[in-house]
Length: 487
Image (cartoon, rainbow, N blue to C red):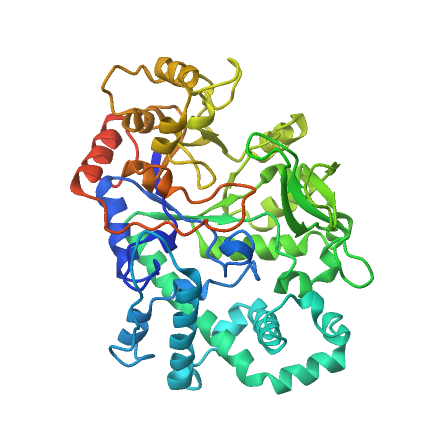
């Protein structure tokens, strides 16, 4: 089946309360996707956001983001008294600090009301990661909210007596953090069931790396390249490129692939299995890093002086295909795609990504030029890391516009963004996905992120649900190009 979908993060939904949630607006958006005749809703990582509010820098690869919990639904389910939801000002940007403050107050009230009455035993059994995550968060708050690298040495090193002591002393806080995760996953799986019943797949995103300040690194130090005090030896990023002259210094700890291989990649198997529970499809971010990774000295000011090192490649994916064959994987293969990456992608058989706005310059061999698209691909007008299609066009120079006009067969007065959307829908690619900002013809003010820049990103929101003409446009394209299959 030729599929189609839309990219919109949950935080961008027009839910009342200052941020998009898993509440009524999420259900309404599923209805919108279904009524358009699309069958995929793609979101960004749904874990707790970290440094710079980035969903790609989370304190846990397993946990859900408490900010996405809908308070109105907690009222309906009896965790909060009716009318207790403090509504925050709504606009086209999320005020993360204010939302976090108010959401924390509400979740604490819910725990005080019903936390001790809620049976979470089955949830803990199904999610063994949650107890270590909850301990990590309780310790983090106890020690002032800073990175675990600054905790007392006995806690940093997870000495047995110290762990037993803190589990006793922080018992109540640990219970709170487990309760919050119980609420998140209760709402998430209800939303997923609703979407699946409508024929809509939830397409999620799995960052390749974990954050340095994360429960994952603290609880699994043997999985990472660390010194004897458990500080990273080298960190992740990418070299200078089109996006950033200094490269991108992500700062994530790098995996100790040799140690992981000895353990038959059990850490990765558990992680991928969890992603398969969460989503119908999983985009593996920075797939390039599984073929070769860019290692930057810890403490370096930028990513200029890193080095490419080989990753385990096929040996990892042989194990994943054997142990978790049910997970539908999409490979984010954007960036420096060398022959080793191409061979690994071919071996795995995973669809890669094509981005139309990357296809209007370069030579005839540009893989993002529509002339070079292939069936086993997911094609986008742009991603969360790009400017919107309208923003891209408004800032493009004359030469680029002339090339794009030939590729898109533009005539004077054409709706350029509409022609871009039609170009990906008409392509041979098995899946076509458009960011919501492009469907709504929103300019650069709707950009979600700019790689290499920290602060001021990830906050864009719709202020209302899409108009009827947006729905009709996609309905028409789906019928014309045989995509979607739900309408």
